[in-house]
Image 1 (cartoon, rainbow, N blue to C red):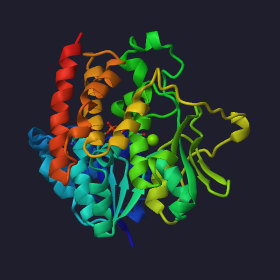
Image 2 (tube, rainbow, N blue to C red):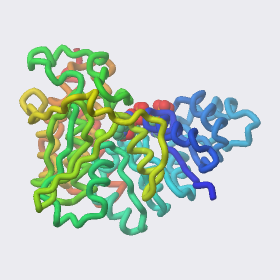
Image 3 (cartoon, rainbow, N blue to C red):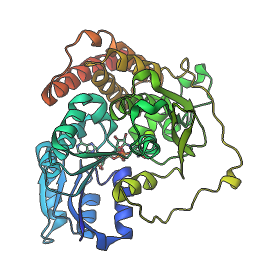
Length: 387
Ligand code: NDP
Ligand code: MG
C-alpha cells in the first residue's frame, strides 16, 4: 500500500530533503499536496515530477503563473494562505510541516486536525502557539513527530520512556558561524557571513537564527512543549561538530545520545519510516576520522538569544509568540541590510518588554493577533535602528 504524503514548504531546504527521500523509494509514496510561497517554477516542476494531486502557492498573485506552469498535467493549482491551509487539511498518512515562520502556523494546525501523523519542522509555529498546538494534537489523537534534529534526537533517546525518569535533556548547539567572533566584531557581521553555517545547509532565516543562537532559544521553547519535563531540566551545550544531536540523561545516571551526520535527511527518514526504519544513501558517521568531539558552555554575553528565550518561556502566555514574531521581523531586516547583526537580539529584547502583561492567547486567532501586534512593535524598533 502506498503512503500518502503532503509537504508544506516543499520548495525549501527541509522540503527538498524530504522529497529526496521520497525520490529514493517512489513506489512507496503517493504525493497529495505540495506547497510553496512564491517559487512557482520550482513548485510546478516538483508537482509534475511526483504527480501531486494539488500544488499551492501562498501568494495569490502567483496563481496564473502556477496554472501556466502546470499546463495540462491535471494537477490542481491553488493560491493564497487559505488555500495552503486547505491543502494541509487534505487526508494524508503523513504531513511534513516545513514552512518557515509563523506563516506555517495555521496550515500546521489544519494538518494536526486532520488526525494522522504530522512531522514538524516548523518550530516557529509551535513556539508561537505552544499548548494550543499540543492540546490540538491530543484532542485529535494526532502523532506529532519532531523533525528538528535535536528534538528528533531527544524523541529517539526517550523511546517512549516516562518523563518522570528524565533528569536532564541537553540540546546541543553548533554555535553557528560566528561562534568564535569577539563581541565588538559581531556588530559588523554581514548577512553572507551569518548564513555561512559550518555544518548544516539550511534556509536563510534559520541560518541567521543559528548565528545569533536564537535557533537554540526557539528550540528550548520547542522542547519545553514537546517534552514537558520543566524548564529547569532543559539545558543547552555548545558542540561545534554537530555529531551528537541531543541527549537525555535519566535519573539513574544513564545518558542516551543520538549521533548522526549533519544532514536533515537523517531525522526526516526517522519520521517518514517511524516506528520502523528506512534506508538512506548517506555516508555513515566515521568517528575515527572525526577523532574528537568537543563541548563547552554557551556564552550568553555575546549571544543573549538563549537567555531571552528562557525568560520568554518562564513568562509564558504571549511572550514566546512575541519573541518569535520580533525575531522574524528583525532577521528579515538584517537580511535586507537594514540593521546590524547585534540589533536582532536588541530588537527582540525591546519588543519583549511588557509582553508578560499581555493576555495569554486562548486560541489560534489570538496567537495570530499577538503575532501581528508584535510584528508591528518590532517593525517600529527596526525603523529606529535602520542605517
Ligand atoms: P526555507 O526558507 O528553505 O523554505 C521555506 C519554505 O516555506 C519554502 O517552501 C517557502 O516557499 C515556504 N514559505 C515561506 N514563506 C511562506 C508563506 N508565507 N506561506 C507559505 N509558504 C511559505 O526554510 P527551511 O526549509 O530551512 O526551514 C523550514 C522550517 O524548518 C523552519 O521553520 C526551520 O526553522 C525548520 N528547520 C529547518 C532546518 C533545516 O535544516 N533547514 C532544520 C530544522 C528545522 P518559497 O520557496 O516559495 O519561498
Ligand atoms: Mg535544530
